[in-house]
Image 1 (tube, one colour):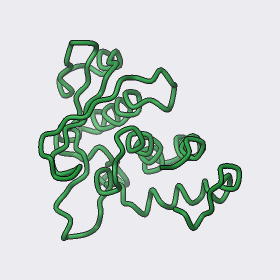
Image 2 (tube, rainbow, N blue to C red):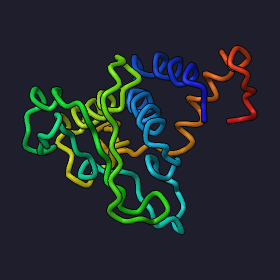
Image 3 (cartoon, rainbow, N blue to C red):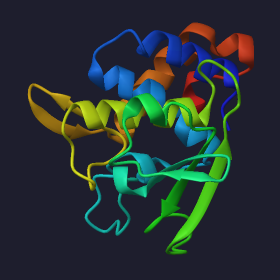
Image 4 (cartoon, one colour):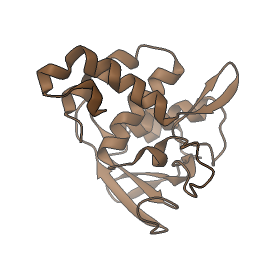
Length: 173
């Protein structure tokens, strides 16, 4: 696992950037909280890989015992969620239908609920379908799903800058 300082710095660098960088910023924290492998939140690029990245329809928000409908609940109401769950369809050791949830951390950036809300809000605002990958963004009017190389580049840039202070070398990414 990466030190949280690397995630903090990468988030801070990317969140003010273009839509792809903003997507990277959010997906890094989501991946951290849900222990995701790159193919679970990025396009793997491999035809042999039968898994697909998490999609909008795989996300469920709750407020205590109240479950929100991710598609029909207004965003102004969704922000009241204090729990997010992802339904694993082709990920995590092939256990179909496994649901893993996380509670809100209370942190302004390092929070699984806030990061998922940010991605869902983005996808809603850009008229995505239920099957749009959570790690997708619009670039020049077309949907683009993050690739593992996008994540690697962002992390390598951070490691070049702060790697020594957290005991990492760029070759470790």
